[in-house]
Image (cartoon, rainbow, N blue to C red; front, side, top):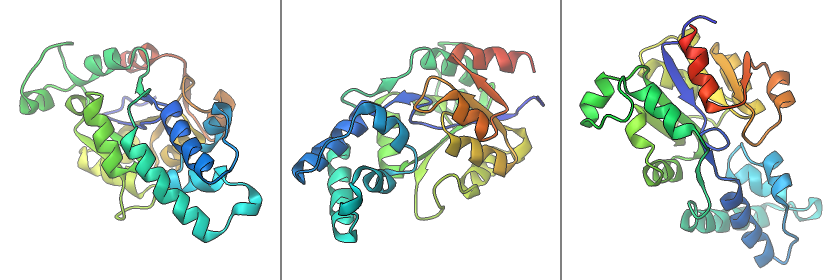
Length: 235
């Protein structure tokens, strides 16, 4: 692989294990509507295209009316906004990886400007969550110090796998798309990376299967955060 000059990370299933908080919030909404809750295994398949899509995936086929979907979407935003870091945390090894990638000297504490200037790679987060919740999670879990840009879903860009947001981040990071390593856990992420002309790196510890990543064009699939650093060291 051509040595990348910048990194873009997906959030859910890549940096953070948020499955249970999202599932618990959605199940509370379903219970309030006297509908059957869903299993964590089902949510692994459902999560990844935003909360509105999640509601549509969770509602039974005979309950797919626009009024109910809108009501459940509003309720889910309220529930999840109030309980977004109850069980959510970074995956094992992620903080150590970010320390190595974001600063020349792991563990060194610097001012934000000094940290930015000493990064090994400019880095960004791109999530299909709303931007407000994305920013709150990043702050709560201590991610903001490691990244130059953090962006969730906004009216400005369509959600992934549309490539507009990823191309915008590449430009902001000072790179062409071919110089960006895009890291994610789903087929949506791999589609985004490949369609944008970026290097697509899939991670197997997230919500989706290795086969889904490969079927959607992953250039690499790695099993631990440490392997990302090893890959970068060889290029």
